[in-house]
Length: 409
Ligand code: NIG
Ligand code: FE
Image 1: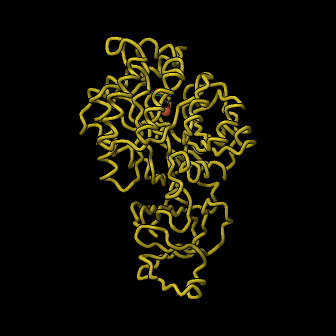
Image 2: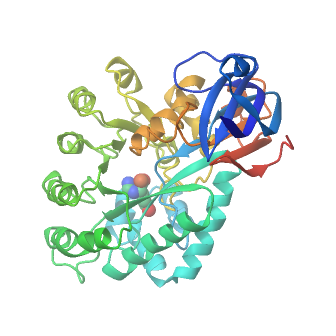
Image 3: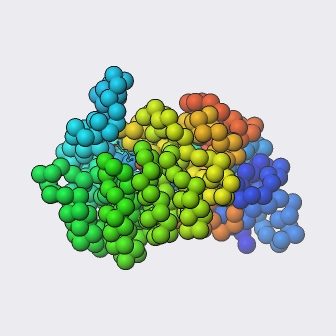
């Protein structure tokens, strides 16, 4: 076999559990990582090297980072609500008065597809510059037929046009729109199940279905109805659960083998045991915890005890986590939630891939997976996340192609 490119002289953090070995090499063929090992072993394996050989100068390489939970497509901002919260109002109070998610819904409904596309592209470029090679994008700021389809179409266009990988999640069940639009939350859930979700499926506009289980959003019976329909249509499901209170959303999610449950500050140990059985990944979102000045931390020790994989993500959105930096989130997960450096890197690679149901394709550096990796200008992995906005120089490869390079390798 001859590779399309051979990357040598690297310190590899494969995140697959194996120890890093000095002077390692990566062979890339057809956009896939086709071989990983010592360059000296190439002749033994009767592998020819390739036309293109890159000297990694003994730099550190990791899998491309994955942001597995964002609400990246929205218009406007909520700086005014930040001011209100600084004066003592709570997130729930603002939401009950028609602010919160609904205020972003109004701005997003008024934005054109083109405006949202440009906003999305710019934000994705910012993510890429930190070594993020896959981003999940949720809908959920449209909340009517036309606007939800508009958001998912924009996400699909971005997926086709940009080299960064995009996973699209349908979050029609973010909150219930105004009473003038639907008489009740039940009626809105029926509209999602009978009309909107089948259309999303028909037009192939989403890869998964999400919901928000909370007093200000939907109860477990409503989420159960949605998930039943989603599964019938063949969608994997995930859930925003136990963020502000314990609604037992995780039990419903586990019943439907959700790929992830996200937030989880108020989760019980019983629910964690259910997650273990249903192989559901815990996605922790320290940005929202920080920005809402929450007091209760997610029970990291219990996830460790029950061996539930922990992922972390930005939750990038204008209301509770206006933070478009996954490296800052890694830092927060370490400082605020006590994750180790290894845990936080695993949380944005291997475990984030699990949270997206994409662990066969991305998340670790193993033969057969997509050739998505980052060569960092650092000596050790702790340098990647120890600072805020230090953003080390790097070379980013997606599908075997260099898509970003400030390292000049
Ligand atoms: O993940 N929890 C629900 N959704 C977002 C908040 C979105 C907003 O306030 O606009 C979250 O934190
Ligand atoms: Fe969220």
